[in-house]
Image (cartoon, rainbow, N blue to C red; front, side, top):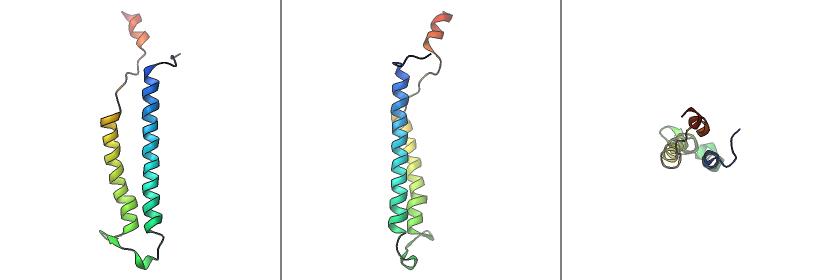
Length: 93
């Protein structure tokens, strides 16, 4: 059984909270553009690359922004932790 004071738990919790933050940001981005720009009369929609502007900004650009954010978060904030138990390594010596 793992010790609750294991440093890996603190790292995993921090990274999980970062992931939840990214999900919340993604939802707010999508909702703001999809319903903010998409709630007007369809005749008034602008177009970006042949797509309605609300769809382009919420789905296409939102996807690109999220890919970049996830890449940066993983490179800058996530750390590699060993999965093997440290105690097992001591017993084998």
